[in-house]
Length: 358
Image (cartoon, rainbow, N blue to C red; front, side, top):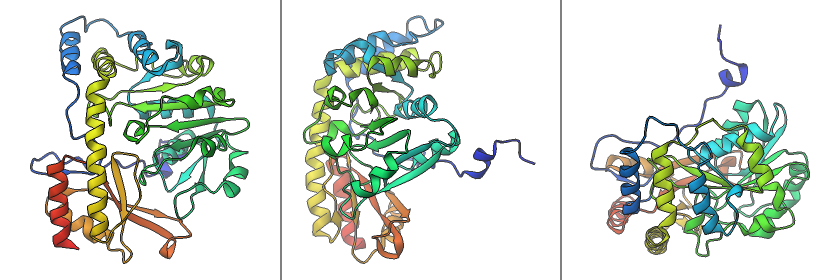
């Protein structure tokens, strides 16, 4: 006899990317930033660690919210700090969705949304993308009209494409919330600052951001949500009392205040992404034009898992991904390789190995 809830007993749970503990790997599988964070982050954490760690942190992260407000040209009460962007997704699910209500998201995309719905006891529906990864609004709209929460990663993962504001506004549920998961937003050729929140439907939209990618702080666990203050006040009721610790608040605030370091790292990643995309296409891969810090590539004759395994044997780690139920793909499943953009030396190592393999 299981003591777990039936909803928990029946799910497999989300499986994160591999994190090898030994050295010598070229690690291009979990979209981490290959460059170090701002030196100001290290100094801020060191200073905070020497302070009053016996005292609880600010439960609302007011200093961080003020720094974010300056960057996004909003007031501080538009922001909710969280223990990683994933915590904000959990807060949103708990805030707006009752058991047996509907959640939707584009597919293929970030399958954590399905796991969160399962944990909540909600029903998850897939908004099936077209073969070019555009949104099929004709099939999406009837689903959206019955949905309480729509998650849209923009840029999308694993494909890296980005949808327009017009596309996104069509996905706002009439009686629900659109969540724009912008974990990779800073890598876009033309980054934005949450302008969609000022649209006519902005009060039904929440934008989430992460420090794991563009700010090189995957090990710190910090993210934030941006929404109308009425939305933020409701979400604050759901979060843990002290969801962000003193060190992460200090480090994230310092990172946000040093935009020059983040922007320079993002510029290098965009440049490497361009070179990497061209080289992969020369090797026979079909590569989606990416606005993120990774690329999605496939080959007409398949063999993606074998390529992944051959790279793994050379201590080069990428992500092999498979999405069943994609009707326009061969055998009704889509598979391919998601490759994070590393340093130029790391990508050179990857390309050298791929030339030997393919």
